[in-house]
Amino acid sequence: MIDLVIRSRRTVTPEGERAAAVAVRGEKIAALYDYAAPLGAAEDVDLRDLALLPGLVDTHVHVNEPGRTHWEGFDSATRAAAAGGVTTIIDMPLNSVPPTVDVPALEAKLAAARGRCHVDVGFWGGAVPGNVKDLGPLRERGVHGFKCFMSPSGVDEFPPLSLPELREALSEVAAVGGVMVVHAEDPALLSEPGGPTYREFLDSRPGESERSAVAAVVRLAGETGARVHVLHVSSAACLDVLERARQDGVAVTAETCPHYLTLAAEQVPEGATAYKCCPPIRSGANRDLLWDGLGRGVLTCVVSDHSPSPADLKVPDFAAAWGGIASLQLGLPAVWTEASTRGYALADVARWMSAGPASMAGISGKGAIAVGKDADLVAFDPAAGSVVDATRLHHRHPVTPYDGRRLKGAVLTTWLRGRPVDGVPHGRFLWGER
Image 1: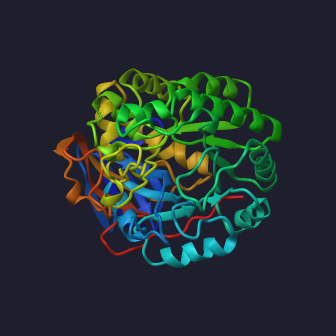
Image 2: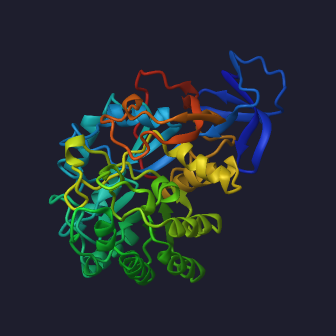
Image 3: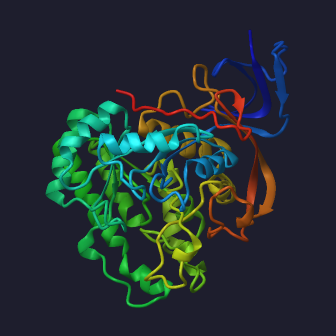
């Protein structure tokens, strides 16, 4: 028996686009048939020339609940995710209070999230000074890996690791499994902005700070044997370090984010602190080099780093404003808008935003339209265009640098494990595979 068939002449599989009928039994993809195959399913949806994508996997989301639920929260974040074609998120351990640095804090987060998730949710643990003993129990409880900072995080309750502390934590990660995901900026090369302008903020966080930190991460990963993943690469100066590490067999991967691929420093209006993030949005020329690194496979994931805040924290002063981009609902059209002009296909976008993150986080049941995977599917109109109205997004606060920007592509329906996301939470917790 087949419960659901979704047909599309533009079904995006790991092998590329093809005309196909995706057969769903229960929560899984049971088979792929020819587009016009008669299948006698209980429900048969024909998208015709609209695209059918695998559900996106966003491994870099700050939900902020519990403790800072007025910034976002599991209900609003996962509604936004589903509306943007994201069927799986992994929540970051900081900005919530308490941060997820031990098992009791994880249990508090699970209690806050239970019954409120519209997509499937996994969790990162946190690595901070003094909690090496907690990493094994967190991994045993089910986190996918651990997040650490090499420079101040912006919240006092989640301090950074020194290089000796990072080495110790990586040795533990090598022992307990999972991956260490690293905010890589060298604090010795950062400074306080000299004033309120974007140029002064950008100058305070030079690309060399990323390159220096990435080089240190690569060295320590090679010494300890831990698997590491570099978060939100904004500077193309990191690419040669990452490429050489990969050639040398170091277990390191790296991501970038939609805002680094679609926005540029030259376009940031003065006082528009919705654009502020750390590391910062850099030049248009740097953006082109990031696209080159993505195309060559040096960068393997594109994820949101959704880090929202109330509007009153986005004061029009780049030195004082909260640093975080809100974009969870908009990542797919933002990336597709730029990718399509650069000659990339939907299959490329699916690899960067679904398969790549799923592989990095060890989520084998997600990330592709393939037999045996969860039936996480997205009906997407790649030709549709619209102007972003922040007040109509599902994010808790209408603050995003994409407000007023014309984007290409629209999510029409999102299915989570074969069921449309319809406003009734049916997301599940995901646990790190051992």
